[in-house]
Amino acid sequence: MRAVVQRVSRAKVTINGWTSGEIGLGLLVLLAVGQGDTESDAIYLAEKISGLRIFEDEDGKMNRSLLDVGGSVLAISQFTLYGDVRHGKRPSFDDAASPDHARQLYEFFVQRIQDAGLRCETGRFREMMQVELVNEGPVTILLDSAKAF
Image (cartoon, rainbow, N blue to C red; front, side, top):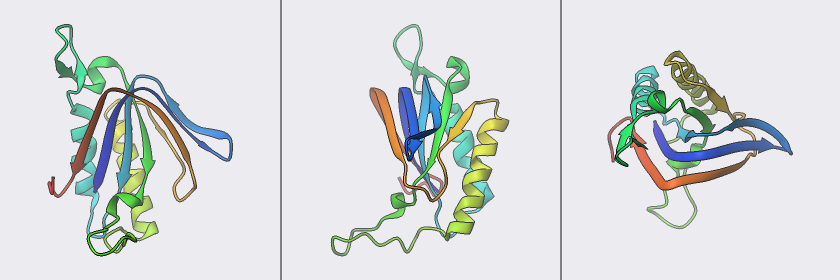
């Protein structure tokens, strides 16, 4: 699984003008599921994201997690994180999981975030969404459950 994690002061996702999810202080997580991913990949990313110390403490150092600051998560499925453009200019999505498999692991990931005691808002799987955010810092972290980067 892959995730782009952005520290935000606010973020929201709309679908056809309807707000599907909205948060204040927290993390916007763009999440993609790969073909070979399992629940252990989702657990790894949920635990890593819940504990990421990327919020500033009283000394201005990134030393606090979502739990420490009382933040929320906005989780958006985004299979395009598996887009491969190494050969040509049109992305290949061969490494992305099938929609059924991806939905199951995306929903499992969301549940794990909630089980950690965090509020987790979502977009809607396989829908065209508009995502708005204010990236604080900016702080953006790339994660991969296979630790490819």
